[in-house]
Length: 84
Image (cartoon, rainbow, N blue to C red; front, top):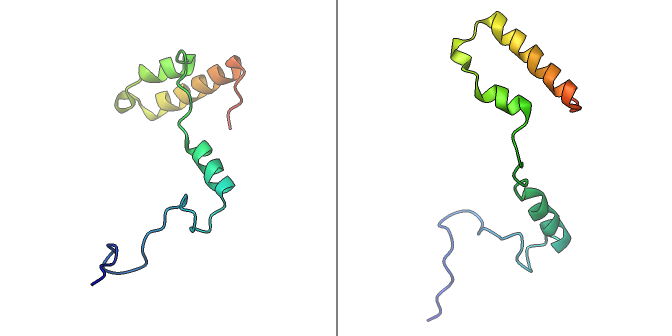
């Protein structure tokens, strides 16, 4: 008696994208894996990151939070980074 490979009790069987018969072109799989790689770690935190670490948002008033956002944006502009 032949036994079939295990399959989920319902629905289609999962297909790995890198399986030869998946129908996904290997170049697509390689590109997706490349994009999914984590970014390299930063060597040193930026000025904005340092400022953000020292903030307790629960202690900010709405006015103070708005002023903080403008100051952080100013730091980004001063560092040459364009805010999106």
